[in-house]
Length: 415
Length: 162
Image (tube, rainbow over all chains, first blue to last red; front, side):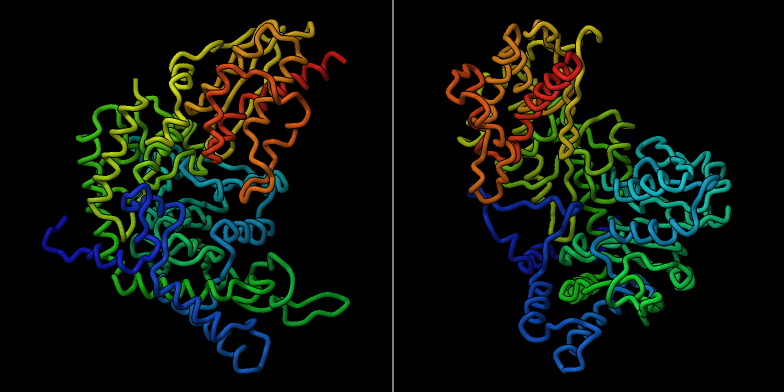
């Protein structure tokens, strides 16, 4: 950590977020649930509001001026996202409903066309259900094997047997950062390991793209998925980026309007990218909002975002146990450099639901539960954690507020 | 913190800290049913000996928050030794107490769906302490988990003995 580096001016950033101005129980609202969904700067809200007021129409259809402005707004959102992740070709940025749908597109299209008995897909034990269940559903249908990369020491993946697990596999699908443990995986290395064995690599970048620089060319993954609502954008839009030659070779996923070149009574001819994977009316204003979110993050600088969160995470790892005491466990890597700002907490035997109920009294918003990662929770031997997740509008005051509320929960429940 | 004290009444914390009828029963003769709250991952296991028309014994396993655990503990104490019909009536009365009226925004009424199946005016005793949960709609599913699991267990016992 370099104390001389410019970090984020959180006080100024907070002014951009109307929702964070409110008070609850006469306390400042402390929002620590951005890992589930982040809040929106006024620039995103205005961009969507202006679009609905002045430029809304369906896209890729009408020839009137409104329709053209709407199409331009939608496609500008795509170009901004492409630039943000270093994608040379914006047509390889597919807008989906969310990251879950993006993975389902890969499973339902590429997977259904390429996987069968004798094949294998490799996942890690720390995947979100979104990167597990689509493969399990397809495995039931197609009869391929799912193999699991286990958890090793200090919240990191155990990569000892990775090469053996990848032997004969057709796909390695893994998270770039655990939404439970905050573990940042060596994504580039994992992609290279998959490629060395002839497998494709899918990176779940839901907790990565919002928090640190991601360059899809440098990463060299075949598919990268993430959601708009975890990166200051609206809900209802997610992204599937894929290598154009792979996306081109894949059959369509959903059928309908907008994804065809021609339809006759005998059949259809699918459109090219990105239309082939965007059947029906897409999330139009959402793409405009996501474009504005990308502008906001670009303006801050993703290196600064990453540094800010690393500093704040280090502060939390240092101060929370000191303040709350030994009953507090922070799961995941102990070394701040190896993790992002996701803090999964357990407090002696106090259930996460009870912790978050008490935290709500203190206007501290965190998330209790299994975080859609039940295989990982089972592996850790816990049912639920209380998860605080950090973002650009959080600062050390928020961590201190979390500590005070955790102390209250400890004193109320622990025995 | 008046709201929280409505939720976490002393008797609830007592049942949480010292759960009644915690453990397992041998199956068979006991019947074992699992209940899940998919939102939080809580799991409740209900073991009942109810082959003779009454709940001769009941044990509760699994893990969960203070509300789900205390509700399960109180449930086990309330129905143990009762006839199956009495247990069903207590369950219906408890679920009626936990119901959010369907007209409330955000409530789908599903928790109270069978509220009219039994007499809602039963004296619920200690269970009344859980009334405060209704003010915290997210937690209603915690409070009803063990009761729904008991209902399912009794349904399964009835189906098996027919």
